[in-house]
Length: 331
Image (cartoon, rainbow, N blue to C red; front, side, top):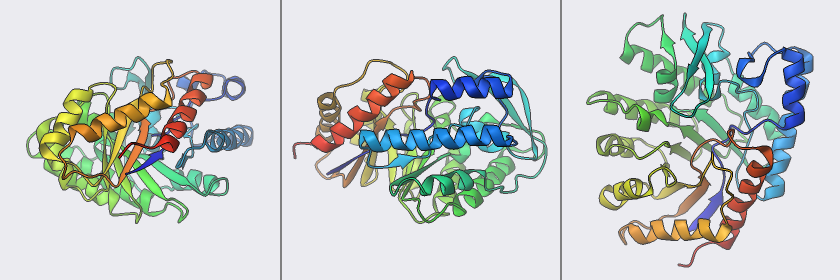
């Protein structure tokens, strides 16, 4: 069993960059609009990208993300910056007490290469690049559709958009985390769950690297989990912080992929987990699963994005993940 330390990205802005961007944009982070930044703002984000990648390298992470410093509206970002999407009023995504703008789709979702450009810039800074993208179901759920006017057609459009975006990722990308918290918080109903699995499959097929579907904010429903297992992805991620018993019950009863991602540290709580504690959590999962379920790779990660943490605690948690992966597990 190989442990790889990584994260689902979406990091907190360093304090100095936050202040500078606030001055340049005239607003706090939650009110900033990205996608059409002027040169001064672009330069700040370039510096932040370098700083965040250097921080991950110093911590010793196995897979390094771009950091998503520009993603002011978190997982909705790829739509928020699209030319055919209007940024609406402030809404709350999920139940995390953070507020973002509502992306209102007014026209065709043609690919624009925004994520690929960020990854291309990051590829010059690390040889261990992991891409991060919202999954198609979550991205569709976070948006308001005023163009396609049919839920199934809209999901297909979002899927095609994401697949084209992912296909444009640079060759330097070594793995992809698709973030799908809406599978837990607003699970698709009967019939739709199969379409969602097919949508995830289509996005994963757009790139020839290991693809992890990271779910969080709780445990998946049984039927949603079953359909997700049908998707041609390399690993499913389970949130061991929000609901470890229900999450691992799914694995114990229904199995999972040969690789697995485990959200073993809390992405919102400032308490920093000890590396030994992280390893114990991984070993506990291994003990709860049937002998036939022998994992090749375990991605040890936070259960959610790390944006919610103070910068110093965020850095400490990166170090704890890397140290845990170095410790390994007792086979």
